[in-house]
Every structure is written in C-alpha cells, then in structure tokens.
Image 1: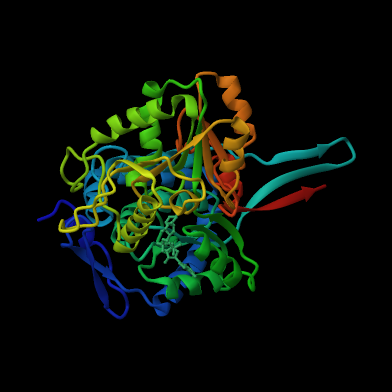
Image 2: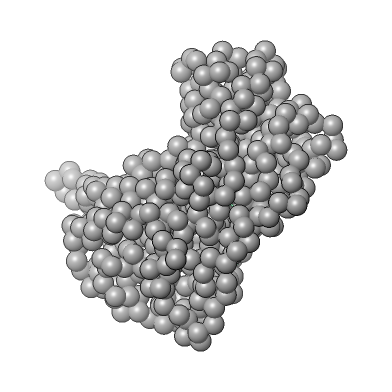
Length: 470
Ligand code: TXE
C-alpha cells in the first residue's frame, strides 16, 4: 500500500467513468488512474464555478485569506503523501530542491498570498477630484498548467485568483494530473463547494476552456507554442491573460567571479528539477580567463549529485518526466557532440536502463548558434560558452526571442548590477538563478510571455481595475 493511496481514493471519477493509467517515469510502473474529463465535465465545473463565485467574492478579503491559510494548513498536514505521489508521477526525487520542496512551496505561496496587503489606491485627492483605484473580482478564472512543477504552479495560479474573489477551474497537464487532482482535493477541504475544481484531460478540454464565454481570465504556464494558440482561441471572448511561457535563460560569469564559490549555486540554477524548470539557467557564458576553472568546478559538483529513483532518499536528480522531453535532450546533446563540442560529463545515457534517465551533462567549447544553446533543452544538459568581451556576452545573452530570467555572477555587486540592467529578461538574479519569492513579481520579457505573478502585482492581475471617481 502506497502512502498516497488515501489521496488517490478521494479523486472523483469523470461523468463517463473513463480513466487512464499514469506511469512512473523512473520505473514505467503504474502510479494510479486519472479520470478522463470531457466537455460535459467542463460545463459542469464552469456552471458550479459561476454559481459559487458571487458568495465567495462577498466574503471579502479577510475571510478569503483565512480560508487560504487553512488550505495551507491542510496541505501541510498531507505534505508527505503529496510529495510521495508527486515523486512517483513527476519523477522528481523527494529530497533536494524537488518533491518535498515543491509541496513546501505550495504551503508558503498559499500563506504569503493570503497575507499580501491590497488597499484601494488614492489616485487624485485635490479638493475638487477624488479618484480611487479598486480591484473587483473577474469572475471565473481558468488555470492551465505544465508537468514540471505541477503542484507549485497550480498554487501560483489558484492562490491569487481565489484571494481576489474569483472561482477557478484548473486544467493540469495530461502528464501529471494525479498530483494536481490530489492537491485540489486537499485544498478543497477548506473551500466552499464549486469555488475550485479540476479537469483531468488533454488539450481538447483545455482548448474549450480557453474559448469558454464564462471564463474571464486565463492563467497559463507552458510552451510558447501552446501560449500562442491560447492567445488566439481566447481572442473572441477578449479574455484577460497571464502568459508564463518557456525561456532559455542565460547566465554570465564575469572575470572576477570565484569559480569554486559559485559552482554549487550555478549547478542548482541549471539543474533544479533535473533541468525541467522554466526559469533555470540554460546557457552559461563564462569569461575566457576563468573558463577552464569554472568548467572544472562545475564538473566536480555535478559528479557529486546522485541521480536515480526519486523515492530513494539519497537522490537529488531524477528522470525526465516523459519520453518526448527525453528525446529533445538526447537529440540536442547528440547534435552538439557531432558539432565537435567537448562533453565534460554525461552525454552517454544507458539506453538499457528503465525510465527516462538522462545523465547530468555539461558541454564545453560549444558555439553560440549550436541548437543546444539556441533551443530550450528543458533537461539536465548545460552548454558552457566562452566569451572574451562583456559586450559580446551581453549581445549573445540578448540574441534570442525569449527572456524569462537571466543571471550575472561576480564578486562585485555594483558591476553585476550594471550588467543586469543590460539584459532583456523579466528577472535578473545576481550570484544565483531562478530563486522565486511569493512577495516579488515574476514574469517574462519578449516571447517568454506577459503579465506578472506573485506579490501585490500578482494579486492585481487577478482583478479588474475599477476607478471610483467622485
Ligand atoms: O507543454 P504544452 P508540453 C516547454 C518545454 C517543453 C515544451 C512542451 O520546452 O519541451 O514546453 O511541453 C495545455 N489550449 N515547457 O507539451 O503543450 C496542455 O494540455 C489549451 C515550458 O507539456 O505547452 C498542458 O496542460 N491548453 C513550460 C499545458 O497546456 C493547451 C513548462 C502545457 O502544455 C493547449 C512545461 C491549447 N491549445 C513545458 N495546448 C514552462 N514555462 O515552464 C496545450 N495545452
């Protein structure tokens, strides 16, 4: 009996009773049955959301925040079962910045979102005119998520939407439905009926959600290609959109950085969740003067990080979540090898091993236009590119049409800040990469998307601004 069986037993069947088996990406063994929700189920969920939303909105911020705090407590009570299920379904290890970390982030985001202050803003008050800016609920929000951080990203979308008085219909990735079904069932212990529901289905039901007239806003995290399709299909009903799309984040190591001191943070900036992270470091630019030293230190760190079945408490790196993503990584690394790039570690998957394990791979002496650099690998393979002038590094970092995150690594904070200001990305971290925080807005530049999540800005994005003038 698995620790999470009680969670799975709470998942309600679809109307038509159809289901499909979800398999563990580490072993190929079944994890559980996910209902296949249909358009009828979607209509039921949307109707329930429309019916429940006015009373939820009428509760006001304090009562809704209290409910989110209780939901956080409920997630905390079920944390270990949720982490075990997440590990089995997504593949990520329990330890390291992985499954337990992700469930902990769900708790932290629920609490932080509940605690954010949001007061009406006085715009003008000059004796003649008094104008205030308020935020009203939108109504029903659709939340479409990916398979890499399925629980955490669901909470990123759900928590601010609920806090602002909206009802929410969630559509998780077809690759990781069980994690989100279980999480929603736990959060729903503390919410009124109909306010939050989840549809376990593929793109057909997701696509209908994006054009449904009763949905006022879509929160989307996923690929740029799917984002473009959703922008188009939501246009007829003029939905509000927050689009968190893919990235191909650059990091620039300045010549004054200490290779040994930064190596572990560089490693986790790139390999968090085995590289399957939207704002992970995916292209590393290192100054010629310390290039070999950084390569060596990174290789040392990489060698010390065990990869394997996520339920083994020792492992901190896991498999790719699905075969399609494994193939992307495999093909990009093979092409890099053929181009003459130097593999420092990895690049040699054991094709007899069960599961979608691709070894931790560092590739040096690679050209900037190599596909492993120019395309998002979304897996455990990091290209390291040599540069000689800062202008060259900045130009290469900015050359792509995406810009989610970026980072600058240096012993000189003010020099690093100057470089940061030149980078075309929604967030630039200094001496770390990918560290998100529920108090700090996060969003993409260029084709990495638009709209901000987290912090007060993130709350405002889940409301309709209303000016009261007079
Ligand atoms: O994502 P998709 P996939 C990148 C990563 C990966 C690639 C593809 O590079 O290789 O995306 O992954 C739903 N209308 N990222 O195929 O297709 C879909 O059902 C409505 C980066 O898994 O974007 C799922 O729930 N919904 C990303 C969600 O969108 C649609 C994280 C994401 O699916 C839809 C994951 C449509 N037309 C992958 N098409 C990040 N930003 O972190 C798809 N969906």
